[in-house]
Length: 293
Image (cartoon, rainbow, N blue to C red; front, top):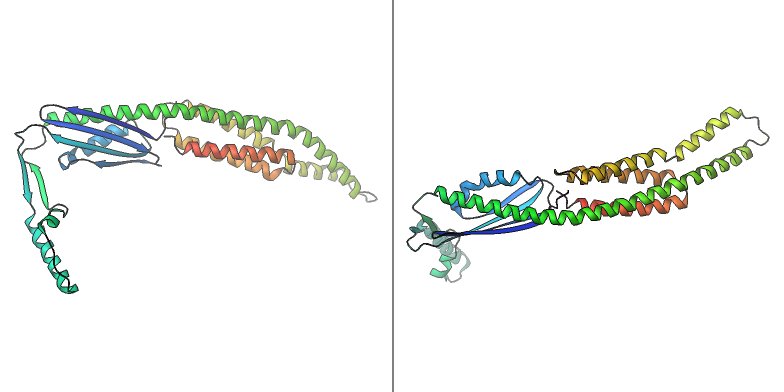
């Protein structure tokens, strides 16, 4: 069953020392891209989290947000002012004020708003129990996100099936009309060749060869066969348990190619109308494929 590229999951963890809230949001993307928003203390965990995600998701852009709150009152937290940055910032403000002949209204409050002016850290390394808590909560969040991706994929599966059914009806209709159109075309060619050859000695075998050549140019039998083959392969891919988004993109492209060729080969209005409807159907398939992992 196909899986959508869009999904969302959230999970939480709490004990007497910390509380965690983790969110994973997945949106469309040609390749797997992971973007993190988390405390500096967890920077070393990024690689392992990426590995866990890549086991289950192959395509899409994922935003992973990890929020951490210290619960214990005796947490040893160190807040250090960035003195070098403060001096450089104040000096730069004074130079700018002097250059522009404007008053330097630098305040302590404005200084505190400068990014990285205050550095917050603990005096202990990240402990194993906290690493385990983060990994386990990430996995729970990932499970929730995957569940939503699968639910949306089920809805997409129904849409794909309906579109393929509609496309098959157009192809069947074209096949029926093709038999009638071929016989009509052959009759018209016979009449035209007969009129052109009236009073002129032309080799009948050569005339027959020309008629066959013109019929071959207008024949769409191969395109119809290939289109039906692609639809069958499309349905099989929809039931695979792996990432099939790129495969579906290929089949959609090939279906468009075959239908387009039919339209360029035939001049019959009845077939042209079916070709237009089929191309509209394929365009809707293309839109749906953009959201399949």
